[in-house]
Length: 143
View 1 (cartoon, rainbow, N blue to C red):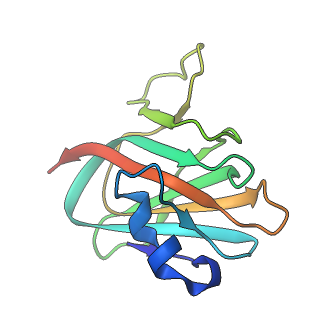
View 2 (view 1 turned 45 degrees about the horizontal axis):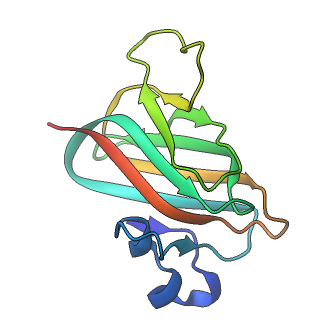
View 3 (view 1 turned 90 degrees about the vertical axis):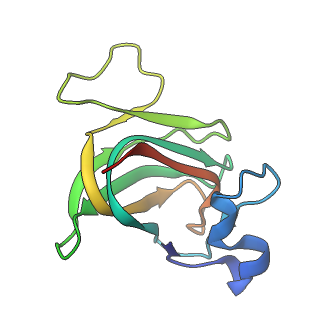
């Protein structure tokens, strides 16, 4: 796991590990900047079918670009997501080649097999470009 930045380089209080610790009290808080990102390297290939994101309202991203690849390959764009500026958990669902659902209720990603996933948070709702993520979950199947 790698991230673009950590607020004031305070990894203990705002580091990337807090996106995955299951605590509602901790979070990853990026530093200022126009574009923040998180990269996940999986120990073996996974078929990603869902993405769970929980931002802090006011510190979210209006546009998230998902890129992925297999080992030894270059990253390619998988999907672009348009999350809400909300503290609520937001969940993506794999499209599996189907058209988007009319009920909305989240965003959709294409089911993809990969070894590496990069989520780029563009167009932050914060004036300084900071992103705050309380929870990041990638669900799928290990291959």
